[in-house]
Amino acid sequence: MFNKGAGNQALVQYPDVASAQAAFEQADHRNMYTDSNLIRVGYSTHHDIKVRANTDRTWDYTKKKTCEGSAPAGPADTTPSSATPSATPSAPPSGPPAVVGPVDSGLKASLRERIVADMPNTWSARLPGTDTCVLIVQGLNMEMVGAEALAALFGLYGDVRRVKMMPEQDSAIVEMERPVQAYVAKWLLDASPLGGRVIKVKSSTQDTIRDVQAQDFTAFPLHGYRQYASPRHPSYLANLVEPTAVLRIANIDWDTSEITFRSLLTQQEGVMGVTRLLPSSHTSPALVSFQSVEAAVHACILLHNQEVDGRLLYVTFSDATVGV
Image 1 (tube, rainbow, N blue to C red):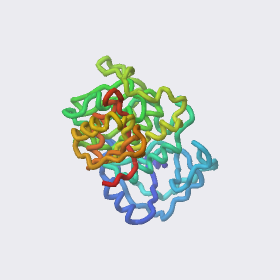
Image 2: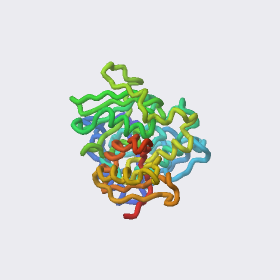
Image 3: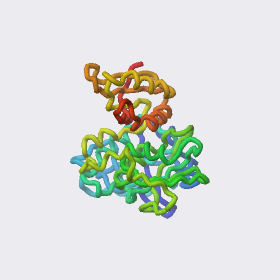
Image 4: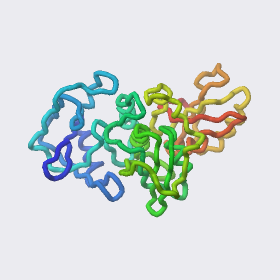
């Protein structure tokens, strides 16, 4: 990252020319957010970027961290003076790269790995580029998505406190319990399909939602992370999966509720198959595959915390592969 007087700029190196060309075609002359942050991309005369250390201005994505939550120490490499003049908005320092448009599963998986690697030991810590608990969600289909749906979806990655819907802008503001949770939700939910559209999620300049018209979810029954002393708790890290076409559904009693559960699934669109992770266990979680990520997102919102014969279903996304 550097600034030569024409705004923030960056050099990004890809493993091959084809990948760089594909990124150029996808990102050039595109707005990072709705009607703002126009990205201009050009080819550089440099053939290689040398990064001696991962810092807030340089990062080598091929290197692993030397220890939990910290990058190798050392001076950062200097910026080449003949860098391309094309300006581009930056991703949060040391954070995952900014994304434009729908994101494929491979990129989202790499984002997840980076998020888990950067996860601090305490909830009070700050992750790069996220100093607020408040997120802006853009591109919403207001006819299909309400505050409760957003609370359920964002609640997969943290405890939602408030949601303010802004129908005139097809947007909403979501306040999480902790900045760490907002960071996770922003990167894993950005460019996800919801209600027939692809939503954009970015950090807000606000530190809280003060609007009295905002819906309060502090007593929301889906909150499940306040009991964890650290964001590095295994149960929290296990849930940090971006929206996929496979749902992991737990807290099923197969002895007494299998018929009810399978009947509930028939009411969801796009179900492809159901697999019990532990066939011999009467409380085994199930993997449910869908025709598309959007169908899985819709089902996740509807099924999470759904009561089945006295037990509440717990639903998360899964990166597992399910045979159909």
